[in-house]
Amino acid sequence: MPSEFTLDLCFIRKPKRTPFQTMIYQQLHELFNGKGTWYMDYKEEEGLEIAIAEVKGLGTWECEEDLLRYIEESVLDQTQDCWDYLQGYQVQVIPKVDAGSCRLTR
Image (cartoon, rainbow, N blue to C red; front, top):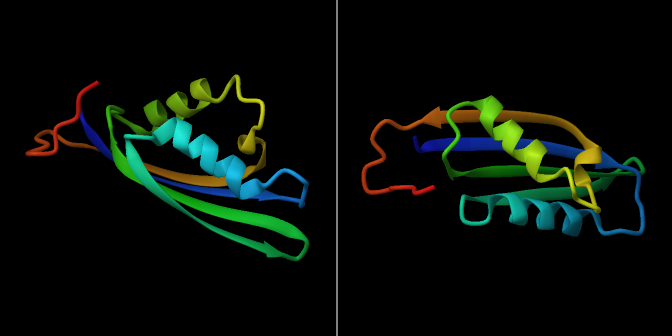
């Protein structure tokens, strides 16, 4: 069943050489390319890198737990893991009984 989803993610870390924004962007691209759109707000404050990402789109998940399981299973083998810096998230999945002209195929 198609669903609409919104995922807000907050990543925080101490500055390192690896570009934080690029790492997060690549992982979001791998996870949600073709499933949704995202934007990221990045800043450095009080000696920390802070990135807030919002992802919105359509998926085949029926509930929040399904979306979180998808993320967990997909990032198990990542070498540059921005998920180590995830400090908080908010997720919402709204199943759509009739998607109208916006049809989603598995």
